[in-house]
Image 1 (cartoon, rainbow, N blue to C red):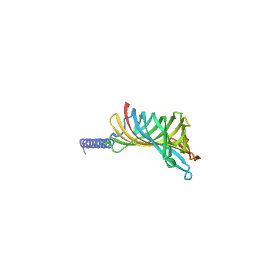
Image 2 (image 1 turned 90 degrees about the horizontal axis):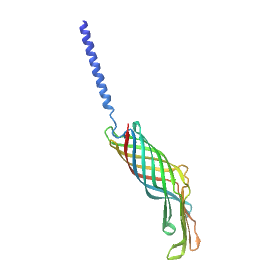
Image 3 (image 1 turned 90 degrees about the vertical axis):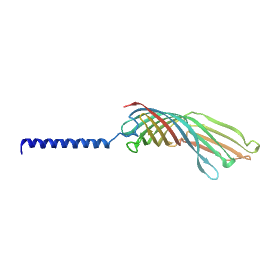
Image 4 (image 1 turned 30 degrees about the vertical axis):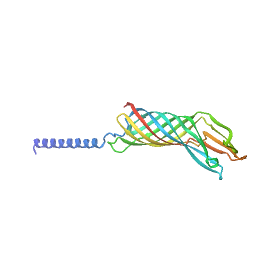
Length: 258
């Protein structure tokens, strides 16, 4: 074989290898596109509007000793600030205002009434999100998340003096009640999930979240004393431990992208 032939074969082999490498590189590139449903890496700010179902637990003395869980709906708002890292991880904090503490006393069984007092609160959350995309081109993503939340309660009480149960029938019986906060602050945990629509720098989220306190301390309580025809009845008692189920929407905007 001549030197010319050897050079030709070597040139053809190099060209074939170069073409194969280029094709392989193209295949790798096509299989790893950017995920449209992930928020940009960087700093984002936002607002959230939340509808809360605040639970309280009531001890009912009759018939027998039993407990029931009462609920009360109340809205809150939240300012948000977050940092998104690589691969869809996000750390978020903020400031929430409204009420996540409510006490309901249900007296419908003895005399057909109920009463609820909601206590003002401020919330400071710290949450960790993990964004999961559906496919590379979809702008939708799902984010399970978990975190902690410090809750600060406005201290106060509401007292009702003794008065007839029914205004037109003072002989039937009388009643009095009080509601009050017993803790100024406590720590809760949160778990939830969100569905996100992610545009270039704007993000719209619908979320559901469950909150409860560590060790279930009582943060607010209520008591209802009453008598029927002069006979004092077992008092009704209810307490809030900051158990909460929330549904809401949030809007975030990336202000510093990296």
